[in-house]
Structures are given as structure tokens and as C-alpha cells.
Image (cartoon, rainbow, N blue to C red):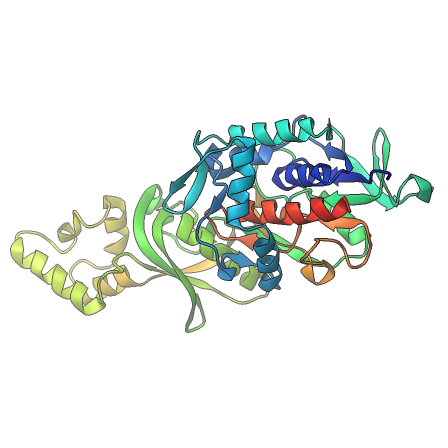
Length: 399
């Protein structure tokens, strides 16, 4: 029985795992990576610690035009299989409140074991190979598809497109996967930055720049709260950042792109109602009658935040409470793709099989990872999507 030849475009998280699964299923595998080494973006994940996955899994952790598609893929290769897969490669995981990391807390450990396994399985990893085109193979005896680079052409029975996205400032982040998909006739959901800081309208941001504060952040559309998140917010010279903002950013950016104005509502004392907070502040003033209203906030908030909260109000406690509980920010848009952790949008999942990740338009063409219209929330979910989609694509590309 002749081995199938599988050509994988992209040597990131999804590309490497696709290669391993294809090789384990007895395919001859070639992996083409445009950088001098594979896995450059993987090295930067989780601030270099590589949050592999998360013990908390449910459909709402994954976004896209059809989030149910992502969940079907995840269920085929869930968190438990991810942990078992990496355990066999030598990665012992540490659980940090549901966030799973390699025990070394080094992303380089993950990349090293993936590369070692791929090379053991005789995957041919070719770096500095910029793919220029994917087309039908002129000689069908040599394979179904031909992948062209500047220097060579590779014939293959199956091609897995795992090129990632333009998110991240890591050199090599690119849009080539989208271009290949479009040339093949696939529908693209417009790629936009996600898990990204947000630019907001305001003249006071320089005053609070550098402050970190606990807050509940709500995404408001008109008079309705679309979604809310709680945690540490980073107050910046352009607006806001931090995990709660990242979790809301994909929705905010997509709505803005569709022409829908959005606001962020920041509640800096989410454990209090307005009534209980006003009573609390009045008690603080009574306990220290020599303090001004502004001075009574010392010990509750960082000084820079106090300056912002009180800049238009020196003695009206009710107005101050309203500002603490609901500081409104009009969102202008996201920071650049370089400052985004991932992209939303990508190849439409309506044209892919959730069981195999194969194109419904072109047999033998598969997609994996971030190039697909699926993105996850912070906490290891985007890597889980990479592992799950890659396992499906690699396994079935070899069949």
C-alpha cells in the first residue's frame, strides 16, 4: 500500500500537531515553514509560559459565526486528550486554577517535544520556504495537489493550510492562509483583531496611564449590556487593556466593524450597590472628618485613578458614587493586529467538515488553527482549538 503524501503549510502549533497526527497515520509528511525555525508564535504564548489548555470547557469559550462547529471539533479531541497527548511526549502539566501549563513553565519545552516527535516520525521540516501557490497537480499520478514555493514545488495527496493569522508582533505572522483559501474559492469572514486592547475616546487617559485596578467591565450596545467580565483592568494612555477587556474585545471590534457604536462601562467597586457604596463613603468621611471627599478615597484606589474619578467633582458624593460604579468609555476601535493575541474571522466553517477539517469545495484540502473562523477566550482556549483542529486535519489528511 502506497503512503499518502501530506504537505502542511505553516510550522506553528497547529502545523506541528497536524504533522504528528498525519505521520502517526502512516503518511509521508512535508512541513513548510516560512521562518528560519518553526513555532515562533508558540514560544510567545502565555507570556512565554505556554498555557496549553484549560480544565473548564464549554461551547461559550469559543467564538465564530458558527460556534457549534468549534465545539464539535473540540469534543473529538478535548482537554483530556490534549493532556494525555503531551504527557506521552514528556510534558507534565501544572494546574493553576484551571489553567494548564507545562511544569517547566516554558513554552520552549512544548515546542521542543513537538519538534522531537515530528522528526522521530520522519516529518520533513523545511524552513525558509515561502509558499506562493496551491494548485491542482499537473500529473495526478504524482498527487492531487501541488504546493509551489519560490525555490521548489511539492506534490501531495492532501494539503493542510495552517498558516495562522496576522495577529502578534512576532515576525512571520501573516495573511497567506487567507489568500490561499480565497484563491480556492472559500468564503472568508473578515479577519479582525481579537484579545486586543481597545482605543477609547477621552481626554484624561494620560492621567491614569499605568494604573491597574480591579473592575467589572460591561460591553454596552445602546441601553443594553451585551456582555460583562471582571478582573484586573490596565488603564492606558489610549484607553483600556487587561484580560477583562480582551475577553470583550472580539465582540466590540466586530460590532464596530458592522457600524454599531459600543461603550465600555467600568465599575470599580462591583461588590457594592450604589446605595451601599454611598453609605460606605459617608461612614469613611464621618470617621475622618478632617478629610476631603477626594482624600477619603485614599486606600481604596490608586492615586492616579482618584484624580480621574474626582477631576470634575470635589464634594458631591452621589455623583462620585455614580462615576465609581459606572465610568463610561466610548470605544473607538482596537489597537493594531500586532497587539492582538489572535484574530476573529477567517475561513468560513460552513465550507468545512467538523469531523475532518476538510474543505467541502476541494477534497484533499484541510484547514487547522487560527486561519479558520474560530477564536477562543483567554486562558488556553486558542491553543486547545489549535490542538483539536490539527488532530482532526492531520488524521484525516493521511487517510
